[in-house]
Length: 397
Image (cartoon, rainbow, N blue to C red):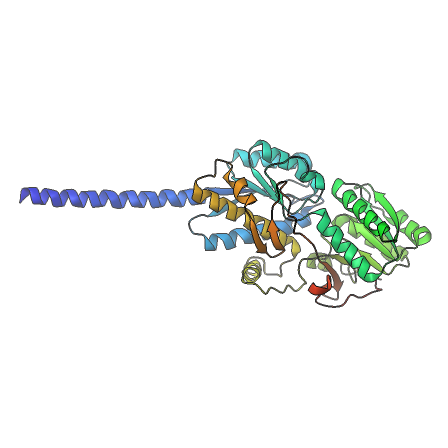
């Protein structure tokens, strides 16, 4: 009896030990899941604060959606404001690296992204973005750098719209920053090759008074279309000058950060009939399960319709989170596993199919063009994706 009692006692104790061990393992696993930290280096102040905030919203939505579907691997975001400055972007990445993040998502402006991505590479971290289209970002041998959009996709969209308009003359007003200058140069070559008369007007990023440039366009160029290649503050300055001087043009066309509901809300007198790149119309229309989850979660968190900045932030980050989770499952997080899994990415997203070439670029990217019409943003190019007809000729005044 004593032996049987001891056996039972030992069995009970063994069961208790196993239960305790399993509970401890569960706690450790939970703690490990909480340690899947991802750094967010993003401009929340400075000249790029508006676009950075929009991208951060999408990144946050991606984390919320991912965590709701992946109880085993939880993503925790660690965010640092790079203040729209290259030096601060480097410092942000270095600080995030010191805090043990597994990768970096975010960045806006190629001149900020390049040094930040270099700092991430030095730390052995993957860096993914949608905020930089300068081709040097992917042509400089950065092995852990990935982006979901590029200059070619923007150029094709703007050129496609101008072709649809049958524009015979275009004045290109562009910032001398690398990404904007590169896009402007590519656009000029494409238009000239089609026989379009093109006049280019570069401007220093520090300029605030665009009236001299607009006056030249009005009196000398007499172009049918003004194409703006810059950032938010640039567009506002150009459009304000155009509203005052009223050049005899048929359309004003821009690229990123322009066809957004935020711009319409903040500058209602400047945006009517202006064109810009847009992934989806506003109010947004989502027809896929992924799109509906994104939209529902976005509205739950921010009580507003998502725009394309949020969509880009969502896509780049969701692809990163999925790569991190796969690497975690394989036990390769500390062995360059995140970069390896990113290179295996090939799936449809809110912006179309995304793959990453050997240089980290997405060869499938082609943007769409939207136009501010009343309180909506209507997709007008390409025709297959259009949700309405373009107002042309038409200007804000």
